[in-house]
Image 1: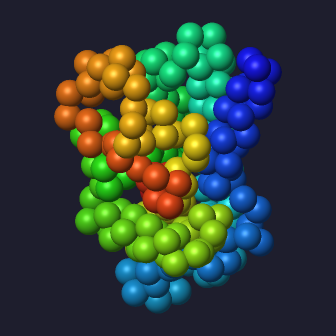
Image 2 (image 1 turned 90 degrees about the vertical axis):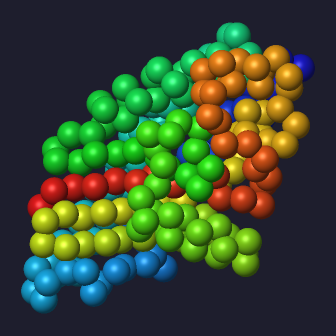
Length: 206
């Protein structure tokens, strides 16, 4: 039974996290806010290169976080995942945020108020969720915004089965108590498999 649970956890995390590490050929339907960039500032080849770099950063972050989360859950249960997300996830994000890049996660319903979306992120999150509910694959939900000073990229994160343990509508009471203790203003609950959980949001100075 423990082996079966392990397989379920790993599979569910893979489905949730690898949405941000798709190959370049799988993200051609993204949204580009072209009106925000100056004429001739960046050509399509440069934008494609930056998009590939962003997806590689997401892949690095997701892989490291998944490894830590799965290990913590297997060893101590889902309550340990709360500590990982609070303490280790930001450190992993910092370790990936180099070469001019910054990486974070955001959501329409945040657990940590510091991750609240700005106006552009909120608009794209709403668009991601709408399109996902219309049947668009999360692998195809991304957005780009470029101006003369910076490149921004967002990639949708779907809600996986394992996410519902901490972010669903029926969180186990002791787990909910642990979450409330660590995040008194938690809003990241009530999700279903039909929801976009949030998005990776990246920025690079140009």
